[in-house]
Image (cartoon, rainbow, N blue to C red; front, side, top):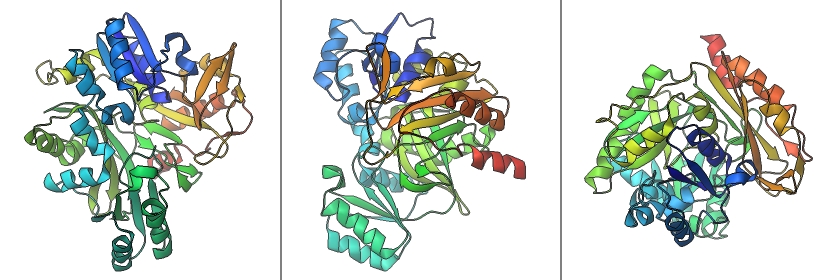
Length: 427
């Protein structure tokens, strides 16, 4: 099969790497790709739906795998279906679950899925009135896509009002902030639950935990993710089915009832609170960086699973997920200044040395390959993933691999995995 992976991040490098292991895969293309996939790259933007359709026709592509949310919210799956090419991802109608936080909350309420109390606003004065009534802490979210940065946790009423004003009046996130969702702040620990979905059935992947804050000890601004590990001791694999029954399967039922069955990967961002699990948000694709450690742990050939999702045959084909028993931990290597302004164009050395280590894989994200050199080309630049018999071993190996990589203006958190390690020690 000739396969097109769409996107340019670490997740897309990992998907191309994993798909390339399938005996069914003949040739992999990545549009537009990055420095880690340069031999397979195609100069078509992930937002150019017409260009992607033309490329698929021209190259007789058999299967399409979109990585990021943008092409999904723009309708890439619908466009591929229109030319008879299977595409692993939800329709444009289903992609609104990520593309609009207000829509997502409305669906959660309709499906009786536990989530934070909330209000939706387009008027700044009405938002202020809600903030005054509910008090801080509150979570202010831009309704639309904001590259993982449109969520602000406000510890005071003043911070909440400033966040709402920055989105609604000052247009900090452009049109993505035309509507804001203001939610109660949930206390607890976050967990990522990802499921393969075929419109009706859900197959849970192992648990994973992301680290959103830029600073150690979960401090500072929210990012797209500074590291992740799997499994997360917060929820053992046997608990995942119960969590999927509460947070994923009711959503599949609701979307099917609306005539828009969800196919692809559904990512439920969960908060494990003292009152039980609550859904923070849904994403309609693999999380980045959770994807990287999850795929390192996956023993199964991923391509037949994706095909079964697209054709609605997860149950009929009796699809099972085989995993390696080890823990996997990934550290994101970023540019100093991310998620705000940061430099680009720094040379990165030592990737080959890290990749030469046993049980280590460096997935490239914000990179480009030029004149035999790998250069930085984004905020999150690499995700260095290691497998270990324990979470501590995976962490130690990952950071040993990180130490082999050099770049000017580099930044990474040094505490990825510590929450999970502490939890294991206390059990």
